[in-house]
Length: 423
Image (cartoon, rainbow, N blue to C red; front, top):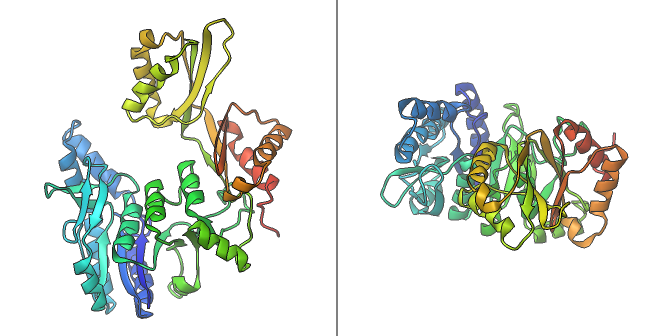
């Protein structure tokens, strides 16, 4: 018997027909004698609808009241799933964030989970009851409802799994696992049997949309084994235990899988792309100590994440150009902040470009193998794709290119690293 947390996203919960399909998947898992907790998202599009209501009611809305409104989406789906499970003959009940409770800290609309009181829900599960828990929501120190920000249900599921000591956390989504790259771009992309927490963290942060970054970080910290599966399977499909998706595991477990011959060790695990980046160039910045700090301090204070940074050798003595990238959504704000600080920074012009893309190559194998970056640069050069900027980490190399060349670059690199599935 295993203790399993199952999480279903918005597309899986979009309407009573899909909720019935989810209930059947959950029922099969419980029928195998497992203790089961289910974490659910709001129906697809529902959170956006509720956010728009808040904006219409008051453009300068109070974040605490905003949380009351948007948390209701998950409350509805948790109640509906519990009702549907009961109709199938299962013992089930919903547990709202404040009933467990899921205690959170920090600001409304972007709260962080501090701890989860699991005693009551564990007693309920031990008695054979399926616990249905709304994701994305918790309760603050003042007793008010809080929400965790976009993608928060993944984080909720991992936190619940850690709190109840689950054997694993199954994240059911609209894809059936983690692929070597986006299968819509590369038809020969392969589904991975397992990836490490580190690799998934990098892939999620550079554009792979499978899992939310915070949830992967929490799984890594708490040692929760996470599996990514598809909820869009037929009613007669086998349970998750017999139809594995992709496991997100520790490096030690990955090494065990390689030693047993269940996984092949690749230098590169996957290729990710992100078109939601914008390039900013500040021209003729004074080339002196402290000048770059004056650029990035106001951006950091405004929580604007800066990724790739290049400081060019100045054309004129004492001046240089500084290039960096920010998320597209923050471009206008970053531009306004820098204009405000023009006199302090001392730059000449701001040049921006939103028609760029970031292509990233990720793999734990890079730690011990040289030449990964060289392969990337050579493959892109052979196809005439110009690299505008580069950033690296221990297990990642990212390059900035023209947005129009995104799909070509992904295909070229997927082939260059031998990731194409054989026919």
